[in-house]
Length: 154
Length: 171
Image 1 (tube, each protein chain N blue to C red):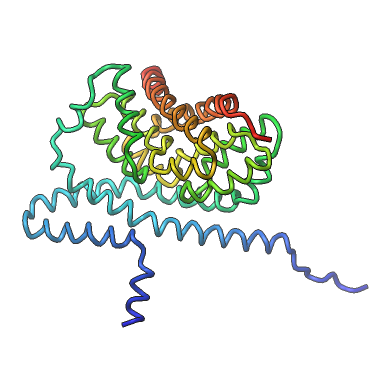
Image 2 (image 1 turned 30 degrees about the vertical axis):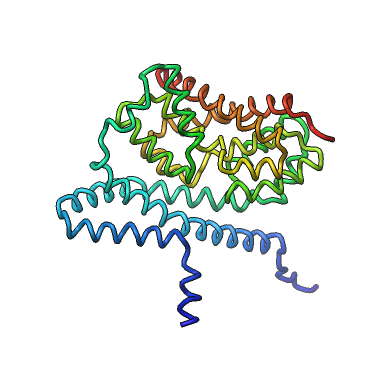
């Protein structure tokens, strides 16, 4: 009787290969992300004491319904990495802006894409792009109000 | 000289950004030493709190890269019923890279008969950024991020259903 051969398992080899590739991809993504995060946090640390607390508050009216709308408008017309929105949102909260307004601002920042709207229209169609952005704007306001109410309960 | 220029080209914009901020700190150090110390203390405090979360995020990103790729997205986007919604949500959350890189794939899926609502839900869930969770948790707390994420997932389906009604599929 011949001895069983130690056969190469192609499935296991394939998984190891994919895992190493995933690890390398994550490392590449992290290496691109970390300098931005560190740089942004260094800037936040620097400007933390420089920005007057009254700067952002003037846009908001301390209203449960109006402030999320204002937050959603500011978030919709702003552009940049979501990281910037977190940092700004955190500062808004510290300066007395309501949680509903800050949430609407954060959600609109990442779901309403005014900057990429022309590209979205060209590739996915005008009707879809406009309907998606309008509903995202309205939902940002609703998410803001609803999140604030849920946070009061939980 | 050419070699030097080639090396400079390989350095990404993110490193230029970090270098500029570090230079700003050097400037502040010479102008106002106490302001510099206060800023550095604040930064060290934030980073110490975020480091453990970065490790977790790295592990999550590796799993996401292992599971989600454009071939898998194309396959599961065509599944019927509730399973499709689940897949759209997870694919949206776990997908990486700039949003405009996904537009051509979404256009292709639309041409293959995938409804606009699923595309909208996929894009909505891309707003949930796993790699940026450490910063989000640091500023808003874990409880808030969990609540917001769950509400956003529900809203992505609401938007998907709305878009399916507002923008009927072309095929």
